Structures are given as C-alpha cells and as structure tokens.
Image (cartoon, rainbow, N blue to C red; front, side, top):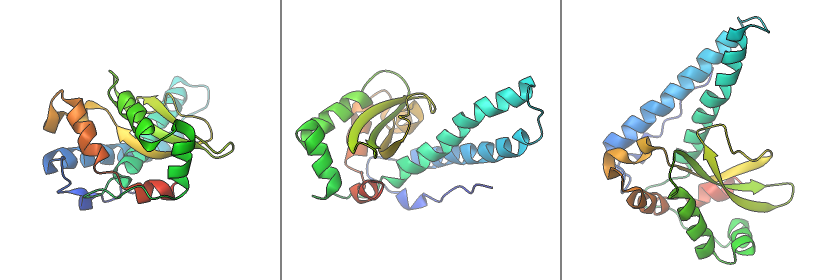
Length: 186
C-alpha cells in the first residue's frame, strides 16, 4: 500500500496560503487512496471484461496524479533554494543558451490556457533537457524522460489565492523552487 507523504513543512510558504496548501494536500491524498483502491480492485477483475479494462485505464490517471504531486511538492521550499553551478545549470545553458531563456520558455508554457503540468524533463539516454506540457496526468510524458522540475498548473494549485491571475501564481512558484531537490533528480 502506498502512503501519502507529509508535506506540511510547506505550510507558511510565501505566496501560498495554508488554506490552498491544505486543500491541495487533501487532493493529493485522494490520489494515493485511489491508487491503492485500484491496485486492489484490478486483482479481482477478469481480463477481457469492461471492468478490467476501465480499472487499468484509470490506474495511470491516479498513479500519475499521486506521483506528479509528490514531485511538485518535493521541488518547493520556503524561501526557495538557488540553482547551483552544477550539472543541471550547465545543461540548461547548453540547451537554451541561458537560464533566463529556459525560464522564459518554462513560464510561457505555464501561462498557456488549459489544465496540466509543466515539466523540465531529462532524457538520460541522450543527456538532453526538454520543457514539456503534460495534459491532465497521463498525456505528454516523454518515455524514458525523468521529471526534474514539476509545476502544477491545474486551477486547484492557484485559484484560491490568485483567482484567474495565473501569472502571479507562476511568480510565487518560481520563487519557491528548491533547486537542490531538482538537481538531485538528475
């Protein structure tokens, strides 16, 4: 059984009300609960039945919802942590020419209409970085790509505090990135 991680250390995070964070933690806990339910239920259904098919289709949604939130909460810290001059910064500069160019693209993607996730992903095989849009939870992942930086751009991540002012949420998120945690993922 999967256990929900405790992210309460993020309460008091600048730019994120405790109400927003607690609601978001509860949503995440629902993904953990539903992942566990599906793991159990999938064992009870006969292959070839509609129930078997639908449970297996739904599993990716719940699992990815659980893991994406863990990555998202895991790459934030009170006050943020600066990007070091280690491997990740070198790869960002190699790919986009500068950290500023990368950030402009990342913020631009986060500003796009629609719900989903913006992810800085690493193709370990080729050593390349990509900013990717992941629609919902399961569409847009790069096979073999490792999510390094994950930003939730579903409305629940910002509407309580920012209404429709997504740009203000993006600013708060960007100033809360724990680059050390992101660098550890590479």
